[in-house]
Length: 439
Image (cartoon, rainbow, N blue to C red; front, top):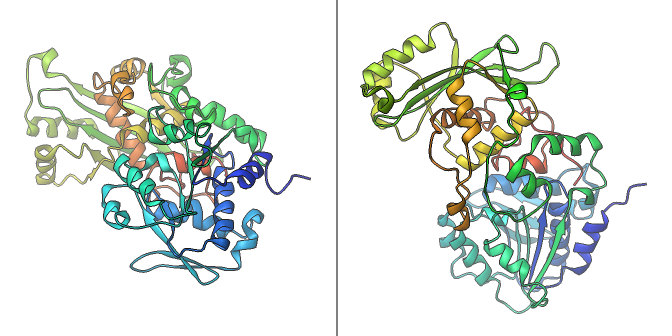
């Protein structure tokens, strides 16, 4: 019989008695439930009244933390469930045995106005490495009353991060810092197929951080797994149910556009797939000629001809081009320009075979093969690619991040998972996501 808690979870619950208690490591390894259980234990005996749950946003707090408490299938937290009430309004609050627990989103610097000046007796911090550094610094200075504690969870990022500094201080200052590293193997509830899916869908930086749980720099080739014989196709793999398109605008730089086919796989029960079917690429330096916005608009009219485009995304910074398109009654949306999470989604979809590129898209293939992390930015704590020869890749990222990462455009499965938390941070609704574990 599988125990209620894994050995690693029990270890965290039993030994997290310092001021700052940090659970870090691989996705789906049991960090969230262990830290939440320990936090609720601490709520029982906390003498102060300033008790907080902090997350990237109100939405992620509910998905990652609150929903766990109210999930009837989660036996690990069943003891606390019957004493909990969730209240929404001007501020979201969890009520436990009459005690009010404030829920605060810390994903931007607007959180400073709420946190500054507070004295926090007890805090649960979810996804700590996603907070802006100034917000994280402020939170740690607020854990100041005698006996106050913080329980935090995180996936690894660059090794210069403040959370890694706290982890590395645990041996010298055990009364201040306790840390425990979680591996994917620490979760006995995970099915072998799920573990294999993670292995196959993650690559490079994402494999090291999210599967191995390593704190490492972003360096080297981004799509190091990419092979033409596996990831390109001579022709579209299926009939498209509809098409998506995106534009990366350039006046003196290249102007790029892509058409991406989509098939949900519902009729064949084979799963959703996407493929890049057609590319447009205009390099003014190579041609010694710049085009006007009206010329690009006419080119796109020809480019899109015969393709039923359902969603059209444009570089959000392309103000003049968007005005030109509006004047001609083109319907479009601003693309989601989240670079890191967009790259992560693209990596996972290409790795698991859900995203391919038609061999006729030669410029895009060239960009994929040459896409690299910027090691200089990584050393400064920023995960970013080298901004060179990436215009069609930007288009593909716009489509993937805005469409796959948009829960309104994808029919969600009946699941939510630790892994989905990490993807884009906030997409738990894609058909490309694996099932969650009981952890």
